[in-house]
Length: 115
Image (cartoon, rainbow, N blue to C red; front, side, top):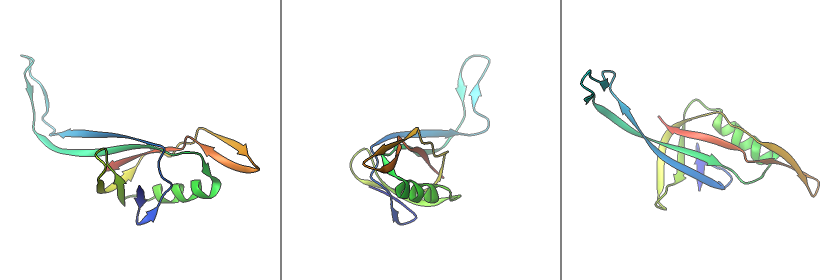
């Protein structure tokens, strides 16, 4: 399940989940090799790949991810639902294919990154 700004998106073909640690500005290694810094947040990132999309579906995804920030609801790795305010990486589309006279976008993908 994927909703962006309350709108249902096509069900993803796959989602790669990651949690990214954000460290303070003074983070790094000392001359002794000892690591210093302060963990300030852990943010979620979702790499979403869609199944073949019609041009209409692709247009809906493109419009949703062109926002600066948006409310996102997505099924998480445990089967629950994450609700985050997010921004989006570049929407990429691998190729187009014709099947039964309908044009499809293949392997459309986008990164959804918690704000």
